[in-house]
Image (cartoon, rainbow, N blue to C red; front, side, top):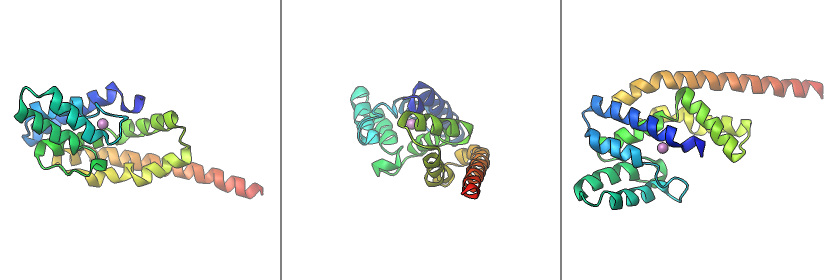
Length: 175
Ligand code: NI
């Protein structure tokens, strides 16, 4: 699916590496985790499943494998695993940032196209998820990057809602 394709993984790797350096996290762990974080996308509980796959792939170095696996299992809220390490916090932040800003908006609509989700339901997705991401970040570096992205998304959301409401009012006036 284009909303979670190679482009998404590459952007998350780049964001994660940048944040890791700024935050003094282990860059090798973070980059490997970012590369593998969506390896089980499409499967039930992809974060836990992805961590399991990473453990197997990196079995030669169990200590490294465990660090990477923890990042992956904790990168998604749905797994119920909270990030315990700075590396896991960095990956979670990088993944959230790629769902924000202009890229976040574009990905939301690609996803809607893929899943036949209506414009109105996409607006709901902004309210329920995208506009809340800003308060789900752990690192200061990510919060700094997020500020502008959140502002832009909010502006777009308000504008979209206004145009949709205008249509609603026009329809009602005709009745
Ligand atoms: Ni992801």
